Length: 467
Ligand code: GLC
Image (cartoon, rainbow, N blue to C red; front, side, top):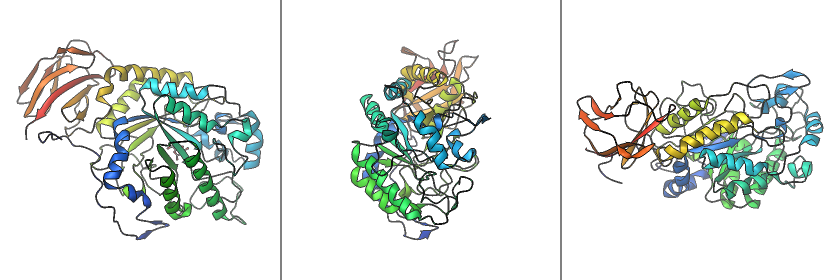
């Protein structure tokens, strides 16, 4: 890397792998994710750091009731939890919903095309959510897509995703509200009336391992496993994490995984907490702030904000609180400007159709990415202070000013000295050099009267930074 370039590069080598084996709750400090530390981890992380933008898909039996059960409606919040919200016994849930599970042909191609069109570089799909319904063809249960509709839904999604040239991730819930031996409670959400009496959780954990093994061994390359979720008294060895991680790595040596086999606050923390507090790279390759964007990123930490487009992960016919395209694009920029990835969720309807509101937003994001993608992909956090007018992202020989508030005086001020700038130009008009002046206030860039993009206009600034 150019010695003169002083950008803060997020995601440097992750220090020593040799943490102590001290027990923490039901977890140890060191897990076999550590085998991927150092150079090997750096190599595995390369595509993910380059990608910056992914599409999350929550889709399961819960997409059928779509936020309504026996006349009761939920207007917002995660309705993939409807089984818990409405306290539906596993048997009733299965009997009611499985016969209605009828994915339309070609739905997976539509998802992958939508992700591609929006500029996503990866897609993460729920192989199993908390309800316990498996999308892959599982030999250890009949509560799976193959038995329900005669199709291996997981395979359809993996193949369609890879066919679009995108990386594929499997979200896999370690919680299971359907398996008769899985502990309820134990720090985890229960369905009313379910007790652990007579249950042998180890039988469920065997089942969990078998299903993960089916997924890891039967579908070609799986690029991410996105575990969900743990609590302090149910984590790590409660899932036999050491063995589970080792098995996953055996089949998929290149795989990346998040750290939700462990009770991390990052997933559920309040906005005030840093996503990095207590982050342990031995417990996962990246950490996952949920539904919010941390105030700052941090050097050496790989993180991914996952976020819904309205307020729910699974489809909810009653949730109309859609974020605007402007909000979503600025969120993406904001996340990337701090060195993170943005995993944006869609919740397809019962037959796999993506809600029109989501399609429209993904299209707008895609149009923006067509012009400005180079200011997102492969960029890192900027060392500059967050400007009033927008955000910065950075590469080794240039940085990008993402302007949210276009200046009436037609001047963008970059609060930095000693920049050796060779050129500045709008990504929307690459041929036209913008006039620049180095002033005591910083670098002043003179811009046209009208913003080329009302949401975020991007100026590329090619430069060297003097030491
Ligand atoms: C939470 C929720 C879950 C959702 C996930 C996404 O863990 O339980 O419904 O899938 O967050 O991050």
